[in-house]
Amino acid sequence: MNRALLGAGRLGLRHLGWITAGLLISGFVVAADQQASDEARETVDGLIAQVEQRLSIAPDVAMAKWNSEAPINVPEREAQILKRVVEEAQHQGVDHQLARAFFQDQFDASKAVQKQLHQQWQKESQPPFDNPPNLANDIRPQLDTLTPQLIQSLSEFQTFESESAAQQYLEESAARAVANNEYAEALEIALSSLRDE
Ligand SMILES: C=C(O[C@@H]1C=C(C(=O)O)C=C[C@H]1O)C(=O)O
Image (cartoon, rainbow, N blue to C red):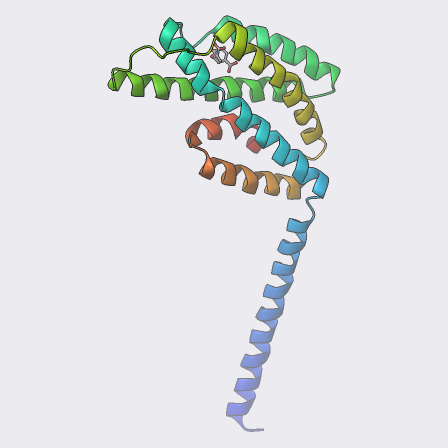
């Protein structure tokens, strides 16, 4: 074999080595990707859907408060919800620090939407709305119905949160939800403590 051929052969082998390594690595990545079980995916998607559902109530809150001129931030209402959340979390074996942080994120996300809308309506000199939703009788009860459902989903999520494939799936799913939501920044806030885990 002449030198040129030998060189080409060596180069070929070296390339083959790199190609094999590449295939192996991508194989591992694909395998890791596939590890998120159907159950983990359903849990993650269900939790994100509930978070989006809660956030979708914020424009109604904003309308009610626009008419009544009630404050956007109501710390005593938040404290009352958090008290119930911590009790229920303990009952269901959910880490109460995660539950607190998660619900505080939900409040902050709701307030971000309310602030954004009030600023917009201020600029547009929006008059009071006709037939605004009622905060005490309609909206807060809707939010209260979602609270135990969210804790239940958090409890299911906790069984997967240490699995890197489930975390990776959460990351992809959350990014997709944020990209498609009208209130992207607020949804980012609402999902932040889950993604930090
Ligand atoms: C939704 C409201 O506005 C804010 C957000 C809250 C929430 O997301 O539950 C609670 C109290 C307020 O700080 C409300 O006043 O009910």
